[in-house]
Length: 342
Image (cartoon, rainbow, N blue to C red; front, side, top):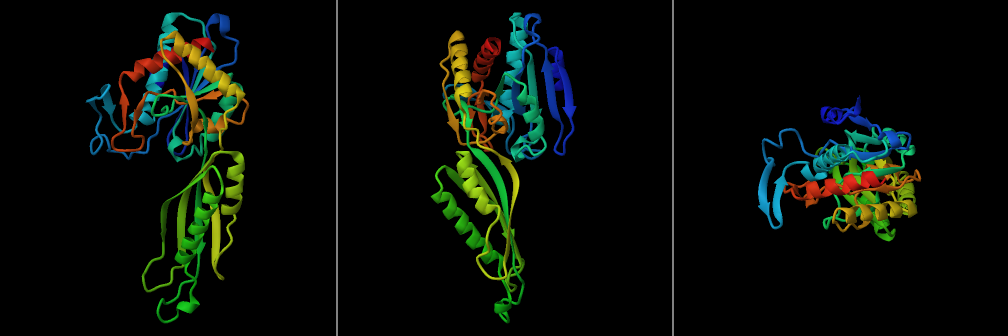
């Protein structure tokens, strides 16, 4: 990927991290616009798929679809296709000879686990930018994303006291029972708070059926429409109260992306994208999304943000992940016009 960008005249720099290197790319503006603030383009090169998927259950293949050929494969929709759109657009822009401001690109290595090592890097690159463009997938109908719900991964850990489950159950404190009650309370809190989603994703605990469980845990996936909803729920779940005497309960935030509520600057950027779409014969619209991404990390910086510039398709994180091949050049044409207009 770095080699492709260098072929386009860019400077590239890898930033080592625990899950692989992030990639920073800088392309100078044309002579008449070299001193302008850059536009930052965001993407990620990690996927949720384990090594070996291409050779096993989800191979890369082209197949006919209702509206034309589709490309199936792990990560093509989320979000290898978006990286191809960006490279293609920049290549076309450079070849056209049209003026443009500096273009900076940040492709991170750990977006799918919450960007724990990329957070500060992304925010630092965004602060001095005129706008931030995200190349995640669009809405199913192709609409762009003008805001995003926040996303937090939180681990609830319950510690009890082991004892014989038949001979001395009263001497024990069940961590599993405590966890069940904590999850019921978390679900009730989420239901009672508008703009909140809660998913118990993974859990474990105990050891043997004849021993009162001394340890249990669960990782929750939480989504928040607004900062107020995020605060209301996390203040409770990050410092939970035990339900039964003798139990100890701890809440630990593993990763968090704040809500990106959009705003006037984002609306203006969408309007610019709509004009860029009209210039290449495309109708462009946008609306908020429930999914979180790295654009959440920069939504509070006062910089206009727009996401969903990747190709159309479906099946993110699913065995039928796919993109419409004809949407690759369509999206690239839109991004080319947008970069020139910026």
